[in-house]
Amino acid sequence: MKKVLSIAGSDCSGGAGIQADLKTFSAHGVFGMSVIVSVVAENTSRVMDIQNIRPDMVEKQIDAVFEDIGTDAVKIGMLSSVECMDAVAKKMQQYRPRHVVVDPVMYAKNGCPLMDKKAVETLIKAVIPVSDVCTPNIPEAEKITGMKITSIKETKEAARKIYHMGCKAVVIKGGHATGNALDILFDGKQFYDYESVRINTSNTHGTGCTFSSAIASQLAKEMSLPDAVGAAKAYVTTAIEHSLGIGKGNGPTHHFWDLYRHGLNEG
Image (cartoon, rainbow, N blue to C red):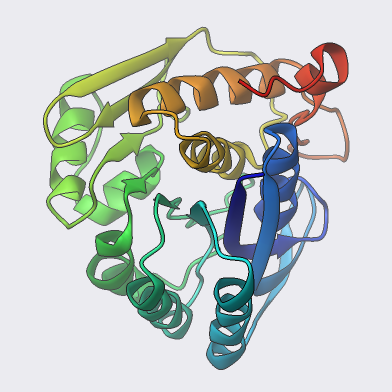
């Protein structure tokens, strides 16, 4: 069985973060592992508080996984502080795992900040360069590049800028744009467009976590990057289409809808 590690924050409400990642890994038939970098007291409506795990404990969790089990892919999500980013980047450089997918989480779906404003520079200098794929949404891509993104042309320009920060590929997600949901992949050579009809729902808590974890799962299973992004897009679209009206705010997606109905496709 392929093994995928998530390095991210814990979402006690179960819709995003480590919890969403582990559900996504299970839905893809890979063995999921986790390194918790922050404990987040949040629900579908708000973030109440964040308690960061000590950087040395983050490093020890990573060591525990790599010295014994190893990985076929790593997904990196919420890294809220400079110290945490430095710790994770250090360990990625030490172990050099295959297929590192970085989702540069900056805000919860309800708009609450999840990353220290001072940490964006460290994200650019330390974390993005250790990633094989970086998956920002439009607001995150704007923060990283310092540019305003209002068109497909600007999205592609931003993708090029992020690529030149050191990652091997960039997927800019179009969930915050208008019209159809268009995600754009740039692998350093060409662009790939992934378009789907926008689903009219507010239940999109954890979609970014789910999408990046699905990419990591497919890469672990030896799928090519363009195909992995396409499969992840289809998976998260189905999860949003059958999302769950849980809570008073932005409810979660349904990570297992397809699995419950059609079983696990090992292909």
